[in-house]
Image 1 (cartoon, one colour):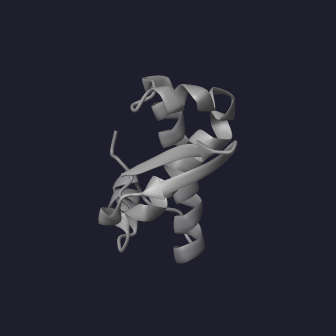
Image 2 (cartoon, helix red, strand yellow):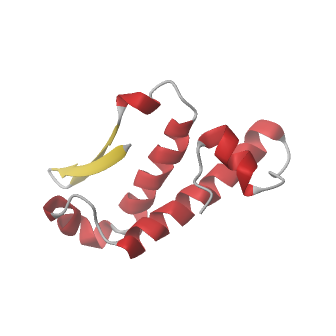
Length: 95
């Protein structure tokens, strides 16, 4: 749903059009932002492979999920009751 590429050493995040009008775009963008922040030192690795490694994907998922909790708080003035609240609101995976 998203991809980060580096152009002239700067990250450029691209989102699939299928999430353009969906709240899921927040999660997808946060996931890619997680890669930019947490994995800046392996940017060249992501240029070479299209799928990355599972540890990096897990870390980006965790980063994105934490951001979605904060976004939920900002929008609803309360914490979500469970992960399914985040799944319904932003497409956060249940895993």
